[in-house]
Length: 515
Image (cartoon, rainbow, N blue to C red; front, side, top):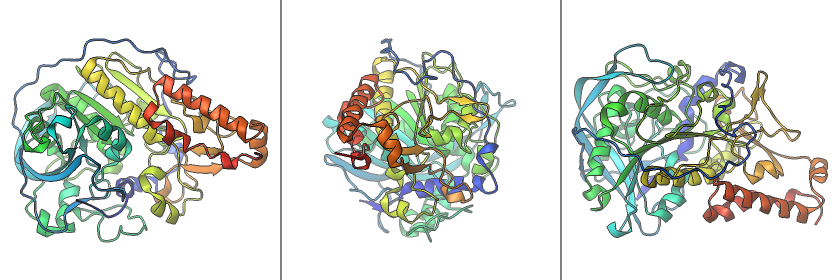
């Protein structure tokens, strides 16, 4: 069983919140212009993309991690997951040790802004970390797709925000999910810049697995974050071979995914490591910053603040596998400054920016934690996870069948900042019914920017009753228009038909005056 201690996104965001101290949103780089090759500026749905041949790459041989079920006892599997059911029907959850000798990578020249980096293998060190596996109990039920999530460690405690956003889609398709404790602070612990004052956080954040549960994790060893890239590579190679980690199923596609700081790491991986290893068949990058994760020296852990304030970099355009980047409004308009690293769609690249969404939101935080936060307004309650599920399906179809995803759509900006309509909702980007037929003002901007813990949570405010009376004749008029917007989102491919009910839950017709 997975021991759920506190919502993982608190752990994920706590370290990132450091960078908000003494900073305002004006410190973020100005977003690049909307790429001219998409219909993103208007937010209008694009025509269905064509089908092309699924990408095929030549994969060089290399060492694989030894995956063994040797982590026993203690208090059980530790993950700061949202406190829901630990095991989905038809699934099992397991934890394995992952061990081997990892190689560090050395940049050979200044890192170019266009992502065309040259890395060379450097020195080597032994490692012993862990992976958590969620997979179908029966190998015959496995889809053949393995999602490898670089677990987020911004506050020194492993969290799995990627899985929590796509959980329903992963399970209904039969995908195997593997979370990798890739970074040093998640294993060994370390200094935490900002510890949020929420129930259950004290005594856990910054301790690392070894500090949280020495009886179970005391044998782990992490040599430093410059080895994280090869640790992830070696786990991917091991999974591709099948075996106990995948329940005996041999996957046909292995995808990398990461959120927030882990997404920064995947930017570095795509630009410098993937050309050497070709370890992954595609990348699902969620909530990246404008910059990439730096390559540190020695046995150091990454300084996440330095990562955020690094130079903007795009993803290289000569990749041989698809890269899908999914961004919240907060990522673009806030301190992460991802708008400075915008790039146009290509045969193997997509960028979606989702209007009215927060870097961390109510879905990830949970009601209990969100209820104790003093952020000046309720945290963002936008349907980011609903869009993420659709994006995942597109990624899988892209890497497996060569079916191109819908074109990218980005938020609208001027020199003065994001363009907003009369309701205060940002223009452009991926549109969903809660922003196009609104009852609430969903924003990626926080209710207050003087509290570091709140800066990544966005905000939710009800629209005034007089404004709602102008927008809708009555509640029936609102419901009809909202349901039509759901139809449009499903047709555009930004929402799945299976998630229609989830999207309808964001309507809140009770806020509309009249019957």
